[in-house]
Length: 110
Length: 114
Image 1 (cartoon, helix red, strand yellow):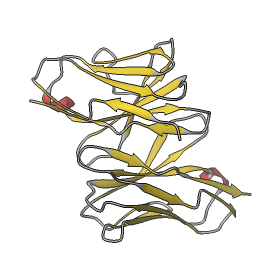
Image 2 (cartoon, one colour):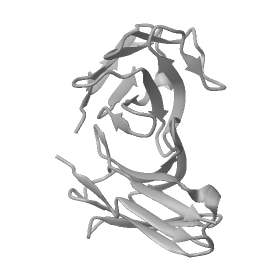
Image 3 (spheres, helix red, strand yellow):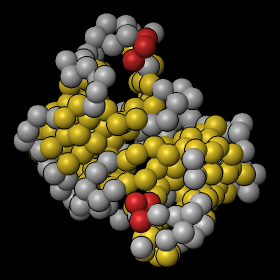
């Protein structure tokens, strides 16, 4: 059974800093990996989707990498802003299921 | 941690039939549940937000008459794909909100319509 772990559980940084969120998974036989953000009281917003054949995806200030062999993905956020404050989740899609990490709660202080 | 059970995990059906997917919060009461779907090679997208005892709120482009959502109790929400067609073949997943900030997810349902 796939297990997904996110480290750290919480992170607080001053505005403007670059930061990295980590996601690890135990089974490298994945279909894709996604990063989401979740704002309080709301559902998920998809940030980046990386197919199993890809190594990274970029969108604006966000860059996500995927290393299947080591079972790791990172989400890099450049020049963080207070509006980036949210919980970030990674999700690993297998053949028949999707497993989510517990999330990293990010706070960006003005 | 809290557990969300989603059934079935995989279903294959003929075109024109209806398929029901269940999402249960096993050890907590969920006033709000979310339904998502993911088409091949695309991101997971929110379909609808389901609040117990009231009508679901559908995202733009999601047909409410085709995707019937029932959230009749605090522990159960169902998604029924009515008169399914091959283009409805997708991966469907639910999540349940425990508090204002924490979501728990089912493991998903792969629907294949022949």
